[in-house]
Amino acid sequence: MLTMIAALKRLGRDQRGVSIVETALWLPLVAMAGLGGLEYTNFVLANQKLERIASVSADTIARNTIAPSENSFKDVFKAVDQLDAPFDVKEYGRVILTGVIGVNQDGEIVNKVVWQRCTGKKTTIVSQIGAEWTQTDDFGEGPDVTLPNNVVLQQNQMVVVAEVGFEYKPLINVANIRNRASDGIIRQRSMFVTRGQAIPNITPVAGVVPSRC
Image 1 (cartoon, one colour):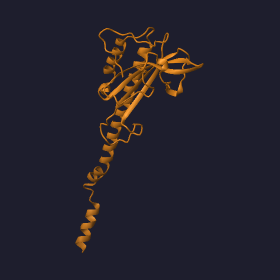
Image 2: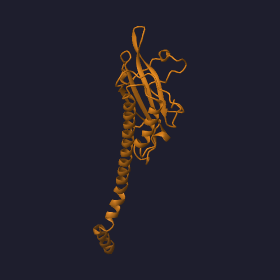
Image 3: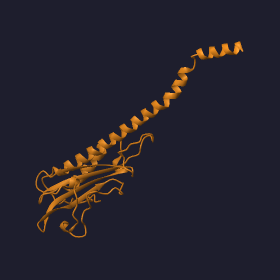
Image 4: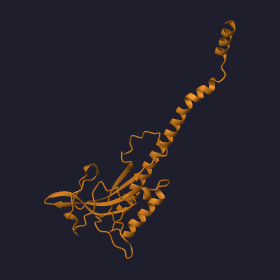
């Protein structure tokens, strides 16, 4: 009995292996926090990239003081490849550029879509502003549309709205990112007033296929 008691006392004083047990307890927590931080950083970066694409795209077209050509949109969409790295927006997303103008109808100013151009393979991502009216040549016959923050334009005032949607795929499924949409699509948009007069028309270019939505 005395031998057993002495052995138990020695065991109680023995600190060997304590650090291993402690490491086994906190290592999963540290790993989880590290991976979660990596995922959150990647998500923030994706949002920043989309915000940049939307801002540059809308601003570039809005700077035109004359009607932009189809090549103007082609050039803007080419720039997306330079702005989205390491994310492939054209493969897993959609960029939508929409021209909206204020029109006087029966004494009331309403917003109308005058044109719309898109790029990207994710065609299930559609504009939250509205679609281009194609049933007749008069865009005024199209439906009224609502701009962000319920902005109502003045008569003949025009804005260019860029909407960018991207199917975000987490690097590691450990982070609970609350700002991520339920459908997995993250979205950013930007709106700029045209610098000069309204540009309700797009100049066609021979041999260039319009980037219609």
